[in-house]
Image 1 (cartoon, helix red, strand yellow):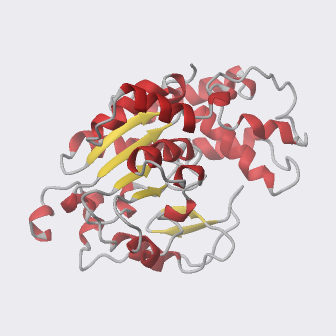
Image 2 (cartoon, one colour):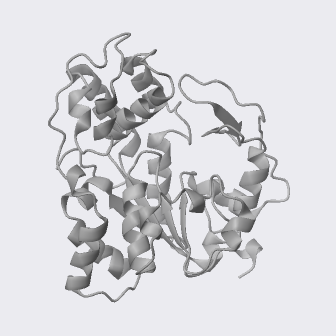
Length: 319
């Protein structure tokens, strides 16, 4: 199928996949401090940048031009959604006997890995990205790889992202309340959680050229066996129940399959330093209950209703 044949069939925001000749994104090659993260703008989206990152627009162009293989599998999710846990399971499924499931998946992260490194990976490639859908390789539409989109409830995502931003600071110089407002205002990178999730939901349900399977992080923690069986079906993998059970036991972190029970009473107060034990629950389900006040919880619920109404996505905020 020619590219020109697809242009009338895809949503307008996906036209960047097709490299419109007149497309010229606005970009800023100087990171701005941001409220909590160094951010760099490209095509109306702010990306988190790391020390050493320079030519963001060049890298995104290379990602869009990446040759996609039909047996590629993409793990997509907003940062702090639990993609590392899913990475371990999928590497064990796709490359049994490999030690790759012990790694974090950073080498395969499209957001930071060069196109040459990605091109050299053997098939089947397990590729990982936090990018909004319009920045992914254009050949996704034509070669139709399988995409796993991981959704974690935004309350826990917000808490986890906040804790992560404090690690390099040495203490809580800004309050959780101010970070919460930035999160609800879509100012924490990658279009913000709500726009990121809504766009994937709209495209996965309304566009048949995208093969997307949506997973909830909480479901993978509550019943990893059931979710792994679902992954095998989606990926057309033939594994018996015993093999699935052995793989789950070997790769899943059972210590994080219970809701957080520790209660923090003052950790989010102004100027309160964060202690190391507060980071131990970043992967826990329900940690938000130890951080959000009743008013903050209501703000979150209002935002969820506003942005996810009509998507059909049902969030799970506890086990």
